[in-house]
Length: 258
Image (cartoon, rainbow, N blue to C red; front, top):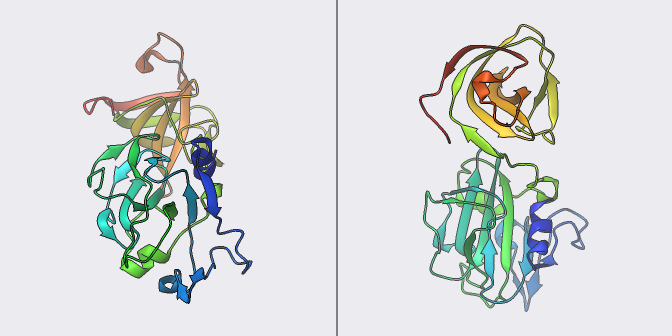
């Protein structure tokens, strides 16, 4: 399920879809009323979805994350909340929310948690119907207000349903493979396959996951963060007693559960 489908499942209706503008170019809208172009700041682009439910409707977080920079009672999108998730690799802007802010910088939120309420606040106090402006970006700080406000990616390619895991521990160590194992971009069987391991290869890992009936390790491979299933999880059997697809050369459990 993508984030827009998630919001629709929560009762929201799409009123502005960047794939359906008359320009035929994703995000190029030039929405103009009485001579005022609401998209002029971004050169005519509106790289976001607009949705409505009802004025002051609670807005749920579309995925877990941390409330981060860009969150402001008086941002470019009025009362604005930005939630980032490093593991997912995405961040999301919720705009035109009712003041005051419901969340604070650094706060952790879960999918479905209310981060604000639908409204019509905006930077220039122009007339605007109550709605939710939601805009997605790749994870990471974007320097410069215009760059931050005007950049956006298509959220329909983001599968928030698969980006979940049952539990995790901040355990680290070294794992040596004894089998060929799929390398994925997320600790899930639905994670995208991005390669395979060879036998007798050592991987340093810094996190252990329980998901989809397997134990997963977060490793580094050629400078990239990847995930491998290191063994099948058996009910009632702890990780260190599991028959793994290789050998634990080192294990540090001092940081405990996530």
